Image 1 (cartoon, rainbow over the protein chains, first blue to last red):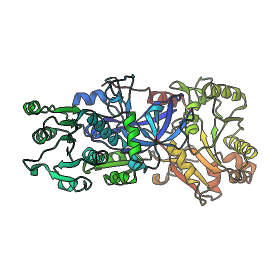
Image 2: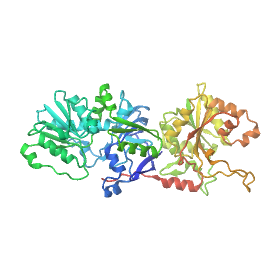
Image 3: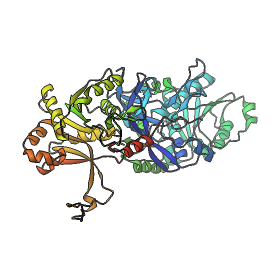
Image 4: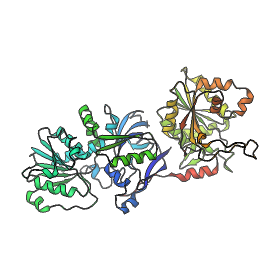
Length: 338
Length: 239
């Protein structure tokens, strides 16, 4: 069949492309229902990625956070109407040591492969997971939840057992989800969120403490820290973490910066710190995210950061959603009716 | 039940020197009708599919279906001499084979392969309203429509804001469609080539559903070239 794919062709300009799709036994056809906009999509949409990268990657369909409905599965393992979360990582090789999201050969939707802004999406059957009892708009945010799960799993393997106090830097979506999940996974630990925006910090009622970064007491110490700031500001965040972290603590980095940033390595060395990079997620992280979101309380908290839902009937509606999202504190969701 | 009636009546005469009927010509790597059918096969709103094709192309149709699908329940029947007769034959088939009292038929041109899930779904959903008798898929007219009843002098230029271009699907309730068609005089049947037009003349409510500019009908060689030009292969960019 012929599929319609909405691709970004230039900053703030999208066009419909047509692509022939073939149905085979390994493919499940899914119609997207709710799609969620990520900061990474915005960097392409607004053209803030490097010009050379833009030229290399466009035209490309954006969006890597989505839920959909199964339309067709030749094997009938998935039934028509099954609601599924779409996994954006596409591993092209198997490796027993390196996780699928770190394999250099893997493709990723809306980065090295077309994203989910498509009329229908042909998904390999191991790239979808059935969901139930999760509101669909909330389920569209499963991807960032899986990212946090990926980082927490790594943290559990790496960090020493001093876990009395854990700090999260960055009060955006990832900071919010990370704080929420750490509170759930490690209820004994004191979880402190550090941010720059008081209004946003007010959302973090479930954290043990919320603190503005310019009002951190000199003697405050955390055993471990998660950096969820991203951009150039992640430099300040990481250096502040280095200052307030206890020796041999682990700093988990999640924020993407376009520019290289400077880190005070002297203190990293002196304190014997571990710095762990985290990016994207794989099948198991999604499966865990689906599991954890069965809890209605978690859904309630995630629902609180869905600031806007835009019904999309045409390309102009997509622009509207992306433009609105630029001014939103947290998540903008698109209800896909394209 | 909701049936899709795929109208594959083309004899291929309008396509220059092409010998195969246009629905069997390829776009990308597959015949046009296969592209079209796949959208109906995967559509959650469609229960069964009937393909009406000229008598002499029926075996060919079954052959290519067998090539692409082994598991799908598709019915191939012979069409009539006109579009409406073909639709009536599909309706007869439904009435003979269905146990349901009332069925809906979504009729669609085989040569409109750019049909989308949204358009099919909107057609079926619009019929849930009992006040709606039929559905027609349209796009707003972009060119000014000029009427001339003698092929020479303009007789009318309708207001463009009220003008639409008809596409397919067109959707009906089977019993009502058969009854309405049979109530026409033979002479009327000859003039009324469009099923939705019959409804409009009978003052029935035909609802408009938004089509897409690319839901085009492939009838000329130019259309086929255009369709092939805009269908791109899978692009995988490198990191």
